[in-house]
Image (tube, rainbow, N blue to C red):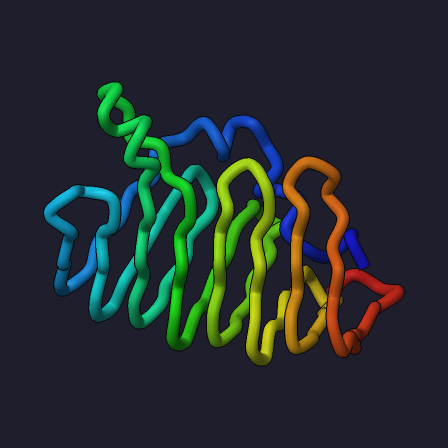
Length: 149
């Protein structure tokens, strides 16, 4: 099922791209280690686009003291929708919650599903490992079409 899911995220071009975001509200900790984005959150990096009700971005405090912003984790909650890629390789999906661990993995939880062309995979959890390109799906089901749509 790897063929239908998230392979564009492993691209070094995407991972090296700046992360852009917008939301209707923002709360940040006084230490600067956490940013809470609220209401109609949109996050973009390269050709990856994610929308959710809320998001929390965690930074590495040690890196921040050295003048760098290193994102440790991004949590997305509520009506999470994502898309990436171009043309026939475009992947779209949804879930209730997502956790992005830069350079490691992306975890989609709660009614997780991803579609590319006519192919779909669903599960209670989908984990995509960025370095290997492998996925692991809990309670998996899917549809593979032999003809492109």
